Length: 383
Image 1 (cartoon, rainbow, N blue to C red):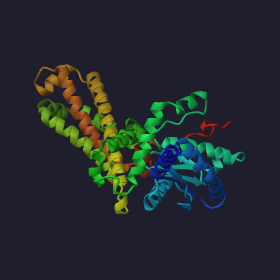
Image 2: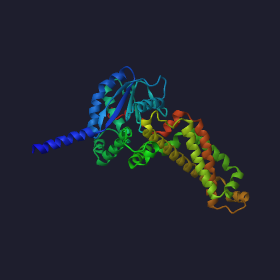
Image 3: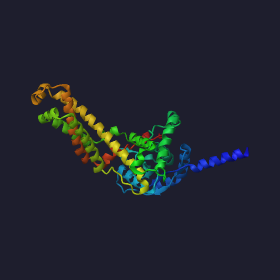
Image 4: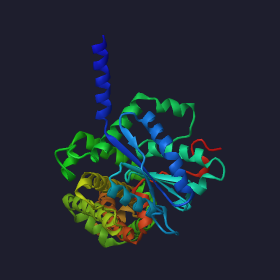
């Protein structure tokens, strides 16, 4: 009996020893944010250990203002991301004394699961109950960084937190995230490592968290340039004739080229492509870049599909069949309108690439990454 108990104890010790380390760093501005970080580090570590017991948590603290005011929220995230890569942390939460705005809207906090970084504006929490509000915010932010939607604190919310499927999903995300920072955790590194099922699941989760279908809605200059291209091409008879005579293979090639050009413009012109600062971060940077590329490609494809629909409706409403027949010399059928809309959407997407180059880097980053900002009244547990 004692031998059995001893074996059980030894097995438990081995299980504990086999746990991998996960770090949630607190990057705090000097002053009150840094003081709060020192007070919250140990309670936060205990909370993380209770909620996510499958790894050993550490909560390092880095006193660093990151940026000099005035600065945008995306600049804060970018600087925090550099610290995260340099120090090989899994996740980071920034406690700042700056006001935060996303899309022109003031927010208390926001999180970017793709970057593994969240930011909290300490003054925006309010003058009373700052520590308690900060604990709630960080708890919600960890869920957001692990790819889960943040909701109001309620009985329903607590029930969802206990749901077995959600727990398994978050555990897989966290396991893969920790493995990225574990030396010799994978025989391949860089882009090759993305072929493993676990990395593909993590990549899919990151892309889903970015909500790529919303990218086009936030790139106003690109959308305006695309609509202008449609309007100009729609009243150009030569374009009607070209659409009638171009083979399907060329129309398809134009579609792919326009999507690829716009996506490449967004990534290159606005510095969305990340470089690994050292060999140890190659896997994480490759994952980040893959998520960025897929997010922008899907977002551009959604923009293309939307432009195709608008071009088709515009052609059907504005161009009588007799006018098309007079220009092309053929009987105008619905398929001819589809071919015209196909060409127009490709030309418009090329126009969108020009507009994308005129967007501000902050606007592009806010569009490409799902910064999950919340207003003060929507902060979980706030009055």
